[in-house]
Length: 305
Image (cartoon, rainbow, N blue to C red; front, side, top):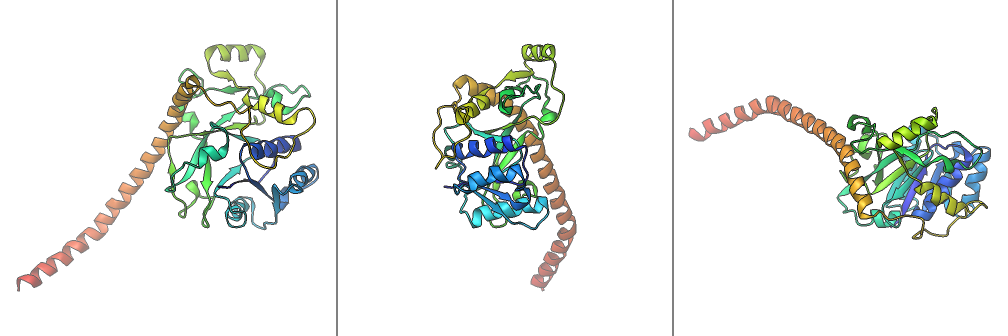
């Protein structure tokens, strides 16, 4: 099995460097990026991985959204990927297993989309150190937390099974993909905070006590271990990393409660699709039903003669 990651856009060079190195260590086999982003310091970062054969810069003439879809299809067609992570800037896809391969390999063929739960860290005051040192606090999805179920609608990100007709511009990947595996989130998408005001120390303390914020230093520890103070090394292949903490029974129990909140939103979307399908069936019945009845009546009259 092969896993590809596509990057249609990039963040700062230091974030990009960490992002690529991290994913190559946890199971990504190849990274594809469009040539349009390979400029200046970003190009230097990309070249270091390209020289090792782990990254490919691809010329795509399409607009940005279409370019993402083309990169995803090329990952399957030219690089033999079975699964594709369409990553956004500053995302670190954390498997709740020893690596991404162990998460995705058991997924039955009928399922074409596996979802990851987004964990977006809160902004922190910059102190001149590595960016990941400030990625240690994030909101909780537990019932006592500050976020409501309605606020979790954008809290999942998809991993796609490769397919010739894969279209990332369409929700779910388009008609060529198979159905999504719902209400199971075996990957957490640890995300660099966007622009925003860092909360004051008193606010942080209050939110930690209330449970709306939690301490999560997993990514900080992982990037510390990978960097080693001398830069990120390019692995020849993925491995089982000692810093990739496998959840305990207690961790899994808390995670299940958080996933339940996201699952409720997912069910709401499913309900919307069901209602739309019912509406279409009603329309077909109203439009086609009378025709069928007339045809049956004619057949009955002919048979009775």
